[in-house]
Each structure stands twice: as C-alpha cells, then as structure tokens.
Amino acid sequence: MSESVVRRAVLLAAGRGSRLRPHTDTTPKPLLVHRGKPTLDYLLDSLQAAGINDIVLVTHHLHEQVESYAELRTVTHDQRVRCVHQAHLFGTAHALQAVIEATPDIVAAPFVLSATDYIVPRDFFTELSSFHHAHDGEASVSLKQLQAEEMATRSSVRFNENQSLAEIVEKPEPGTAPSSIGANLTFVLPSDIVPYVQDVPVSARGEQEVQYAINQWLANGGAAFGLVQAIPPEWQPPA
Image 1 (tube, rainbow, N blue to C red):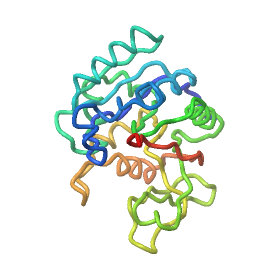
Image 2 (spheres, one colour):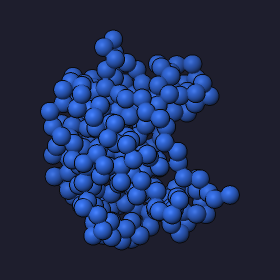
Image 3 (cartoon, rainbow, N blue to C red):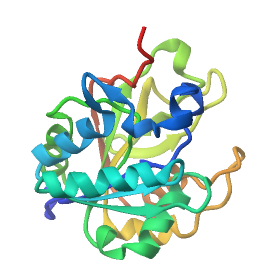
Image 4 (cartoon, rainbow, N blue to C red):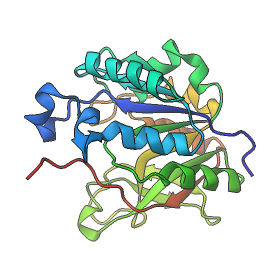
C-alpha cells in the first residue's frame, strides 16, 4: 500500500490549443467555458474533492489570463494555486523541469501530473487517489480503453505479468501496439522521478516527453499500476 498521501498537483496549462482556433486565439484552452465555468474549474474541483489543494499550473500561451485565474481561485477556494511560466513549448518533461526549478517543494512528495484538456467528473481524482493508496507501487497511471482505429495514434501500455506497467509506448507503429489499453496524460508520480525528468532527450517529435522519464524510472525498478477510467470529454466548440 502506498504510504504517502497525495496532496499536490502539477497541471499542464501552457499549450496553444491550435486545434481549437480561433477560440484559443483570445482565450487559453484551460479557460474555455463549459456549462458556465472554465474547464480548469472541473479539474480543480475534482482535485479538491480528493484532498489535493496545493496546485501549480504550468503556463505559456496567454499566460496572464491563467495567472489572473489562479489568483482568483486561491482567494475564492481553500486551494493554493500557483503558476510557473514555461519559457517556450518544448514538451511535457520540459514543463515539469520548469516546475522542479521554480517550485521544488511541489515535487518533494508524491504529486499528480495532468493535462488540462479534460472535463473530468468530480470523483475522477478521488478514484485515482484511492487506487494509488490501495496498491504497493510508487506511481499510478490513469488508463483508457482504446478503439481499434486509435491504436497507432495514442499511447499503448505494456504490462508485466503482475499487471504492473512495464512501458508506455507512444504512438506505436500500426500492428505493434502491446495492448489495447492507453495512458491518459494523468499520473500520480513519486518524488524520485525528478532525476529522470531532468535527463530526458529530445524525441523524434522534437519534444522532451515525460513518458520517457517514466519508462526509464520503470526500467530501473520503479513500480506503477494503472486504473482504467472512463475517458473524460474534451472541450468542444459551441454548435
């Protein structure tokens, strides 16, 4: 059973949201409104329901708006929300490197790392946190069932015999996916992932990707288990 209680989170809120232009030309993707409130509210509400109240948002595109949001959220909710600016967009590991440098306290204990694309239900992070504390590994991964047509465009997870994670394979070649289970960009990670995050090469896609650090950590004896969760929807332009 995982011993440390998860109380901290890093949320990736830096992207340009190019697929959602022109909406994201003037509004950062995490602040696009869904049913009367910013999509980021859904993640923070779910984290708060799970007892996770120390948050760092990684910002870049239209960062001033996200920073203003964080200040307001901190005042109106019992939740500390800070921002770390990513100087240029260079992948998820690079974003986490900025956090390690600017706010090392946030990664000094187990923490959630998540994208902000998702409109999650309120119990999403409670489920993941409860799962994390029920197994003996140091890390947990939110998993999803993949459709056949997604196999070459999403990550796919390779499992060990005991159903712990052996590897996250990013966008496998057609016919080579190790399973029909993919990884959401939502993890509970231990503090000892930090040295691996600091040593991530540039991928074939031209970015430093956190999945590489996780795979290296797993290869060196780290233990992670995954929870298959319902795939949360992403923001859609109004009809």
